[in-house]
Image 1 (tube, rainbow over the protein chains, first blue to last red):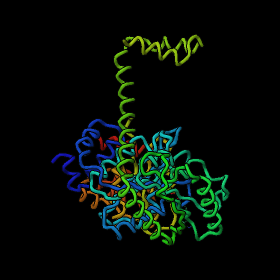
Image 2 (image 1 turned 90 degrees about the vertical axis):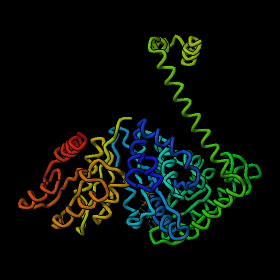
Image 3 (image 1 turned 180 degrees about the vertical axis):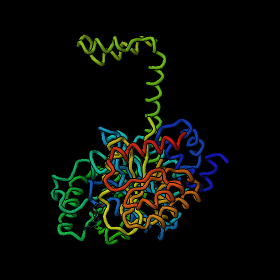
Image 4 (image 1 turned 45 degrees about the horizontal axis):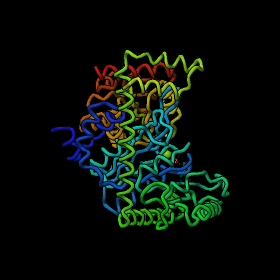
Length: 325
Length: 134
Ligand SMILES: Nc1nc2c(ncn2[C@@H]2O[C@H](COP(=O)(O)OP(=O)(O)O)[C@@H](O)[C@H]2O)c(=O)[nH]1
Ligand SMILES: [Mg+2]
């Protein structure tokens, strides 16, 4: 049986091995994925982002349990942690919080190192998610790295993005990081068992109000940043460690999923994501082709001129490209 | 992108601290490996499941409780049953000398007692994986 057929038949080892090939950007992995592409597009992609230590993994554990029991669909989790920029190594520790999920054949957890990518996901996370989608997982939960501008990329990748905050991380409107409100379809204040959760909720609600002026985006069924008054991101509270508030989060996720389906927002997001993927690959491919066809041309010469401040980087590129014709 | 080694570090059994396991995890990370760390009190079933889902290149088990003669064979048996026979398994902890031949016989790639340097452990992982790939 081919790898594709084994994965479609639910072979988890075959799936795990394909994910490794994809992570390593091996051609045979991408080849198998291309054959599986036809079987993708069914999963609902749920992004979970927010600062480190707010309880993302703990909440993912609870959400996965609840989704399993309430929707019966299979759940996959992709948990991304940062690679060391110095050694390239990584400690991937999200599974520590997900032990309740072990033993359930309807759950598949994969840890990924960011491998140098700075947007909160790894370069190959989308491809890994596609493979899981083809593998029949109805829900795919993607936990981002908890730092930097993680929310931007996940908002582009997922259908529903949850931004997780916790009390005490800077509870005033100014402290709320630019960008997270646009990224969030749901805001969750976790650790509601700790003092100060109400204050965080208030701060988030106040910022949301500020942001949702008459022409401001809040929620984004179609394109990112496109005005859409139909979805107001709710601010919810959970105590993931205790399992409190999780059902309300699931309710909101299901509402958002239904909302995207009835408004056509889901199709819009999928198209935007696929378009971005095609353009990115086209960019990579063109660069590769350009450099490959020009082994004779000494890029070094152009660079030397730039180093000497004789031509600007822009001029150097223009001259390289014009020589191409 | 070059293939990265992925290593599962797991702590089966009931013993209550994982300082040693964490030291090893960090040493492997500093050697450029990706370490999936699963925390305390893992059952053999949990370890085998994680090894499968994460498609790791090797497993490091840390056992201080003395239950290695029960836990290690069980892990190896589960790995075999799920199609991962031959996946290198390395063992650290308090392992009496008289148990070592039996464990090696079962297929354990390397065994480290207390006081083994992290360099030795990193080298053993590197070698076990290379041996497995050839
Ligand atoms: N008090 C409290 N602690 C929590 C809660 N959820 C998670 N934690 C703790 O917060 C820490 C970080 O959790 P983790 O899920 O790893 O956070 P992540 O870095 O965002 O994935 C752990 O020690 C958790 O036990 C909660 O609801 N209440
Ligand atoms: Mg986490």
